[in-house]
Image 1 (cartoon, rainbow over the protein chains, first blue to last red):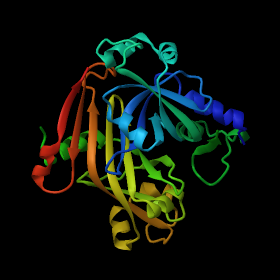
Image 2: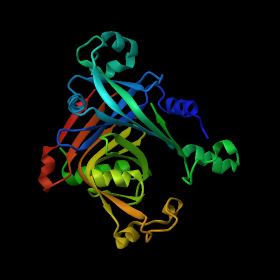
Image 3: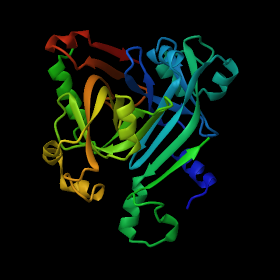
Length: 162
Length: 162
């Protein structure tokens, strides 16, 4: 059984830098909506950062209801991060997280532009599913006890609380 | 501007081959949770169906609050569907939608009372299309309303982002 450190390392690996996730918020009609957003910074201590344009709907949505989910899927790896979002007005932080390719998203504006906003998400719970690993196991027919399931589910899945 | 029918066809093209979607629900504390769900081999027509275990968290969460989000991610394509979910336990409907691959998850088959359907009535959808597969370049975003009369899709907006 994986320790908390191993589990949270796996979350970090899945959420590595500049991954495109689906960012889920509640809109003013009460519906759950999502849009692709790119994560910043690979170090995951329970906080995830996103850059966003000042005219984006997501800003009003997180101000009205701060509960969000970050859903990520790639090649059999799935990740769900439940947390609380807030807008952070911090030029130093923006500069620290900025990388040149972001210019494409902000009409050439840089991190000091008021058009560039930063969303901070404090994660309360992360859950991951690793179906790619299951596929590999089947292929190798390995009986490695380290990859034994904690329950009857046919996939490797774990919850990490922050 | 696409009509409702054109939008549904486009969404079908984009999600047709995607085997796993992320389903986001809200728990009793207001926290948002996502998990991977096997998609059905079925044309999208404004309704989305998933099989689930009656005792699963997601079923309890949907019974508590019906707003959900479904996201489909593949390559540079992203589809987000906002809808209202309900739990359906009709045996005939379960048999109609059943396929043998589901046995891995639900070994007792569609007649088991522990196997239920999650029916999502899609209210709106949004898709992001990256024709050249380059995220950060030109992305077209299309928002469509899927409810009401055919011409309700006239509310949809197409936005070009750089």
